[in-house]
Image (cartoon, rainbow, N blue to C red; front, side):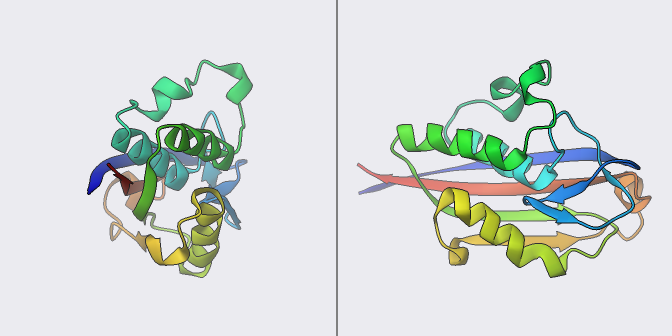
Length: 161
């Protein structure tokens, strides 16, 4: 018999000049980047929060506090690896990841396959189990005014009892 659990993650960061735009571990050419304690990768942060939620382990801030100077500028992919290690230690398997990036600009569709591959390089669940979508807010709110980017994710995990 299988046991299933799901978690939801949401993250948003401010855009600023002088920072890099990294989403799903992919460096995306753009005049603005995401401000954050780590590399600001909202997609990976939302997946981390969803994975932690499915494991009932709190959230990204409780595991990786912004006050921890050793995490300054760290790759969010490295943070995902650390959380995935916790998942493995708990004997759960990731069965599916579904995520949405919300950004007015830049167009993200050319980068989605590379994002999926990066996520699979950590979770090892196959590309058919990782879905990433991108949408805009049609110029509404802080995202539409190009002041920030957000992402949401759902992660489903399972194990055999």
